[in-house]
Image 1: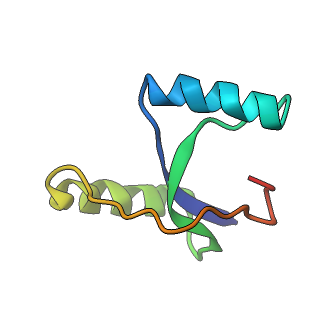
Image 2: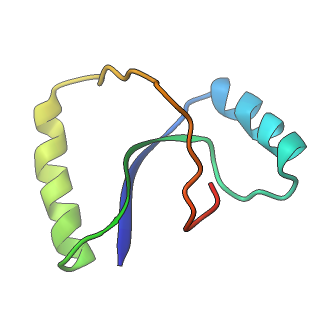
Length: 79
């Protein structure tokens, strides 16, 4: 199984990027997001991973600071 960690973008940025993507790639079904961890295979069951993430994420304690360096397309999903 492949997993990634993404954060979906809020409005009004989300609507703007959705419209832009539809102009560039008509019919693209994916919502605008930032990928924090790119797709990777993980061992274990999804419920166990979900439990670990729910335990760890509150420890972050607030907004994350991101630095955007480059934009990439993942070969597996063409996103």
